[in-house]
Image (cartoon, rainbow, N blue to C red; front, side, top):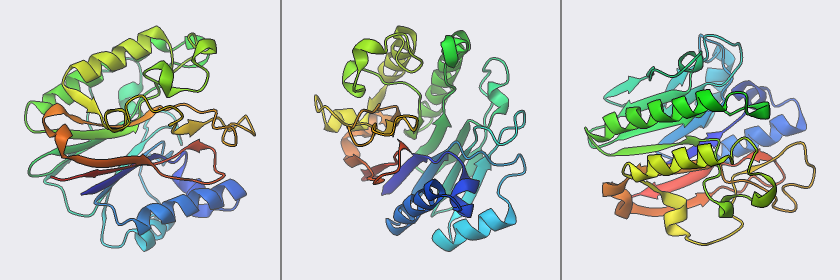
Length: 272
């Protein structure tokens, strides 16, 4: 079973692919489709509240013919956040949960969960703590609510969950840890919350398969022209699984996106 997860930073930019970046984004989508994954998880879709437009759906259906599409869009801010699952098999049930998060976070389309016979597949786009950490307190409340939500799934059957968690867990997970301890995504508070999530019964699949290996990142800042060239990145995207199926993981890797900066997809292979 193969699953791919990616923060795409706008479905529409990929579908239109009018800019160089849009062309690269569409190219990554083509690469994902060629892998014939069982499930594709997408974050930061930036779709309208109604979901995919006719043009967007038709474009994606050319890549993922016969797949099922499930979108969760922001109902508060337009073209903001949003998540999507694309599944080869039709799930038993699909949920777009509210988890009791603070402010408008529950209305930002941040989670989609599909139930299958023997497991759940869920994707998340975790809120960023924001400039000057203005949203850090709310972010911590989100983390508590999200952990409780995943635990509620895990009590029923194992969970495979992925996404942009907006946190580099350990110093090994970013190029310059010493200068980022007060930066969004690497505060002690965010890292501690991620530890609590893992301690609740889940495995960080990439780190489990590559313990101690440096230089594995999933995000490179667009504002720095040399971030990708110098591999000056952060690992803030993850595939997590319930501990009881962690031994079923066969491979996990960051998909090469060439010169395209920002997020790269993760590809997980698991024998379930």
